[in-house]
Image (cartoon, rainbow, N blue to C red):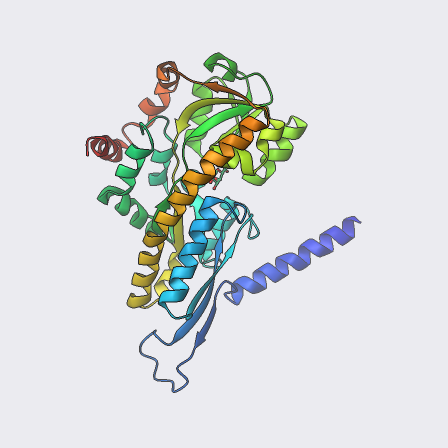
Length: 344
Ligand code: GTR
């Protein structure tokens, strides 16, 4: 049995390595048979876009809209196949593949992205946005657009932001107050700010891939996790962690991005089409988000989850202040820009 497992894993490593060498991610077909292809207009591409969420989830609805717009605007020349449900791997692994150019596109949370580009850490800082309106005022500003471009230093290029609501804690154990968070073993998206955040709350952070959270909650490897309503519901975490507290500690936007390697191959015109299609897909994603978020909340309530509203968020903000203090200097400029967006 062991030998068989090892053989299978050797074979799959060879397949992956072979794929990488062959540039497996994209199929590129020059259609200009005459050979005089100075322009890229004749090139056909088939790209892959990875998303961790299921096919009906708002981010995937956004991804598909983006792919459709690109397909339409290039008259079928650029095809983007969307792979939902972590079919191409968990977010961290996908980002590594994107850096290599083996996967061309992904929609990913700013949470894991922070491990690849520290600018994105600002979105993991607690309570920097008052509400979704404040977040979007910032996301639609020039500094946020520059953040997308700053991904170039990490071999990627950000195209657009998508909605992701607010993150709240949920647990197998009673969770109706700030004091209850203390001592709980809580899964976090892997990045150092999340680990500091849990320490500030007196909890134990367990970084873990999203796909492992359900079984870890079910078996008690962890007590708790945190996420927005749509993820809490679509991942079925609500079935095994039935105590939810609406503390709204973070607003961590989603990012639609392209591998720098793929971007470099594209003509200037194709780049424009791709960037614009990404921006144009935001409306669809945000509408889908608003609808899905309400439905997710209804389903979770109907399932009998014990939900605690947090009337006064101040004690929570005070508790996590050491995290802000620790990172204030590092994120000084962008924190000021976020503050400025509030007044717009
Ligand atoms: C969700 C996010 C996912 C993933 C997940 C997680 O809100 O949309 O991309 O990062 O959180 O907690 O891992």
